[in-house]
Amino acid sequence: MNKGCACGCSQGNVERGLSFSNVDDNWKLALDADNMFWSILPRVNGDFMLPQNMIDLYRKEMKHLDEEMHNFRFNESLNCVYIDPTDRCNANCPYCYIPAKIRQQGTQMTAEQLDIVLSKIVDHFKGAKKKPVIVFHAAEPLLVKDILFSAIEKYHKKMLFGIQTNALLLEKEDVAFIKKYRVGIGISLDASTAKVNNLSRVSRKGEGNFRKAVQALDWFDGYAGLNVICTVNKYNVDTLSALVEFLHKKKVPMVLLNPVRLTQKRSEQVKPDDTIYAENLIKAVDTAMVLTKKTKRQIVVGNFANTLLAIISPTARRMMCDISPCGGGRTFLTVTADGAMVPCGEFIGMKEFSGGNIFKTSIAKAMESKPFRQIRARMVENIDECDTCDFRHICGSPCPAEMRARGNINKKAVFCDFYKEIIVHAFKMIAEDNVKYLLRDDSLDQMVMEYQY
Image (cartoon, rainbow, N blue to C red; front, side):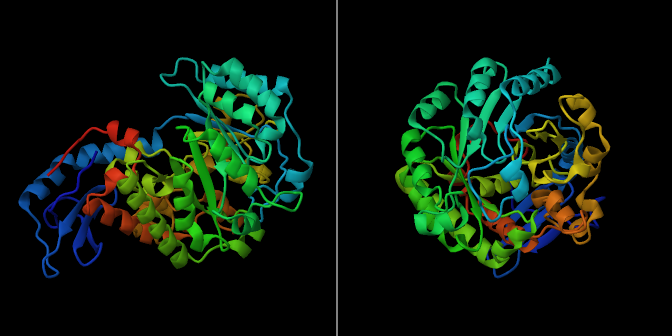
């Protein structure tokens, strides 16, 4: 784990210098954006000191950190496969990244087809030190619940499983099965009230998923593998703190307050303003921190936690959207219901980004296909403004599919201003020694101090 310190350096003293920026009136940030060596410097009447010890430490660690960042960006292997066992969905969310026609008329895997997919994944990972992570995702995977559960039962000793669901089809006996096989479960919920939630989490019957989602939270009753995914949009952006409070009462250990992706044009209509989103996410993070301190029971805002990890332990982060190149077609891929392999689910509907069909070719060939290589070639060094931004290896300028849909894959992130504000707040939380309240306990337990001033 990289620990910040009261120190600094200049370009005149070393081969490559640190840049300096303001965190707030009390703290200054020194940062090497290329390898994420950083220090938070206390300010006295606006001034800060640059101790020689920090300069010496920077010189000592620079090469090691350069290599570590390079390996993390370019040499991490595939470790997760998202499987979309059905294209169809029983909901009609206005920001869904899957084209409406596919959600209404798409294909579904048979039990035999899913078994072929999983057996090919087993073969691909043969000899690997860690089990691959398999996440049933996309439209609504519980539409084919029976074949999923049979597959989990068959392969649970060879894979780690997760399911992302709107909970409309989840039943109490399903919860028992999920707990028995230690399956990770993500419940989609956008707000703490039905009125707000059901504006964006709309079922095809014209209602919403609020009642069923909350019922599921009660059934899981604090299950360690539970998380809630909230898609932040113009309807719910000012209710994020209330959602955190609500979920804490429901014993939910983690919530992701993710920005709506603009892969589909209709999503533009529900995009929240960057500044308003940042203000409300920071309030939600502060709410989570206060609740964790007060009750000694954690609720973690997962996307903010990942930002913290990107700073204090860059290679420990798990959400690979915020590193460049992103994890799509690199550390994860998506298999669609018809067998197409795409770098990420956001590319569903963009046929030119298929790396082949898993029923006809191998995962290894898909990984080396032209579309996958194209996504891995998208790097912040090739994006105007990102190439000189201090935070380029903290945010990663997501998302390539989003930018491809907007006409230029090599443009900076839609939520650029939002990311900057959140990253500055993360440095502030580090300076104020609040990290222990904002990361999951198991994340902290797995970290080892590498260097410290």
